[in-house]
Image (cartoon, rainbow, N blue to C red; front, side):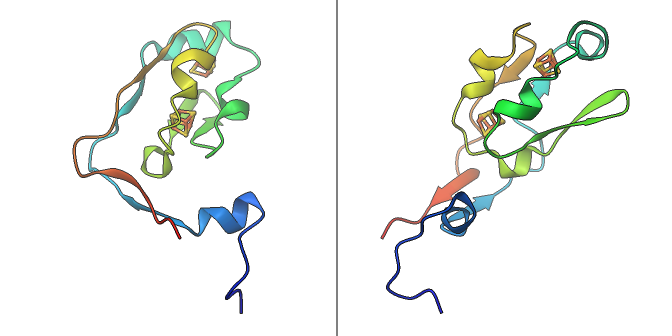
Length: 98
Ligand code: SF4
Ligand code: SF4
């Protein structure tokens, strides 16, 4: 159906990645209270290209399994409130090129 055609949209490109998720998250909010009280814009829910961060009433849900490891959340959080490391060896995103 899509053979021979280069993927164009983000959604199409997402089909070219696979994930080998660890059982433990490599992403952590350092102080959830800061998200609750000092960050009305919850900007991590906007800048993350993989939509990993979802605000759920009073807490941040982190769907770490789909992280693209772009590193944006290390510098994007205005409160430096995200503890970010690469997933353990062998885990995380796998790119299929070509
Ligand atoms: S941008 Fe930082 S402080 Fe704000 S909600 Fe996200 S993790 Fe919390
Ligand atoms: S590293 Fe990139 S994809 Fe992963 S959670 Fe942070 S902003 Fe989202």
